[in-house]
Amino acid sequence: MVNLGVIFLTGLITGGLSCLAVQGGLLAMALTHEVEDEVKEGLKKVSSNRLLQPLILFLLAKLLAYTFLGFLLGSLGSVLQLSAYTRAILQIGIGIFMVGTALRMLNVHPIFRYFNLEPPRFLTRYIRKFAKNNHDDLVTPAFLGLLTVFIPCGITQGMMALAVGSGSPFLGSGIMFSFILGTMPLFFGLAYLATRLGENLHQRFLKVAALVVLVLGAISINSGLNLAGSPISLSTIKDSILAAQSAKSRAASLSNPGEITIDVTGSGYSPSLFEAKSNQPLQINLKTNNTFGCSRAFVISSLGIEKNLPVSGTEVIDLPPQPAGTLRFSCSMGMYRGEIQFQ
Image (tube, rainbow, N blue to C red):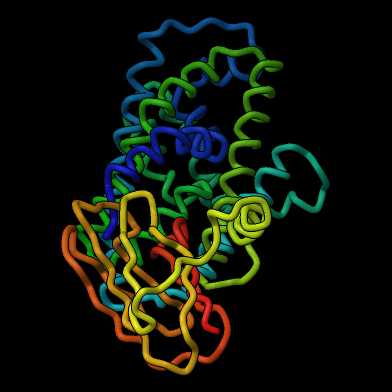
């Protein structure tokens, strides 16, 4: 139930910044020793033609490597299906790592130096030796592009988790291909620009990238909390504020006490808040109409319910009697959520 178009847009809008912040070292090595001198000193000028070829080779090799990685991850997921809680914990963990990485980039405190994902030292030494001995050929940028799989950025790690959760080698490869393809235009432009900047502007660029990663990390943590059905998240806090300010956020009234109908759209669930009677069975009708996106993967984590909805149609879920309290549901990525309040 993954929308590859949305994944492509994720890569296009945010992935390039995050990837460049983490993989900039490998990229600098791929762009030969002339570019390394330019990045460090901000003095030397390198012709565009000398930059273009190794940069393209680097990015194409990276695309190939991650597509193959997605195939392997999807194959793993087909054998080992992750529960909603497991995916939620994974998302929260990825979000924490992203936040820590951003704070390290911003030099907030020395403790955040531990949020630095690097390849093993023996591999780093080998890469440097290889690049030093072969900086004039075309093998080096392609080889270094392949090695980016060892240092994925936080957003890429989220896509990797999604590839595992897809449970399909072909869908897994499609997820990684779409995301990395989306990163390429922005990654290409920003990488090229970063190599042309002086040290001062280069540092400013990294700070902007760090702020973006910080925001995306918070979003990942929030989505993981929603997927786990947590009563505390940024979304629940926002809903509480809106509930206090607007009468429109009141729970939907039920014409049939034993039945609710939820319209599943590409932008979430409507209504998203219901009241129902406790200790009585409840029928949930999930209606889709040309609906795409992760909202079609309907999850009630606390009951272990996961339903993949059709593009158009109605899926029925029969809930057993529930005690008084709040039952939370969401999409498989925790982006869209809702509640049923049993009274």
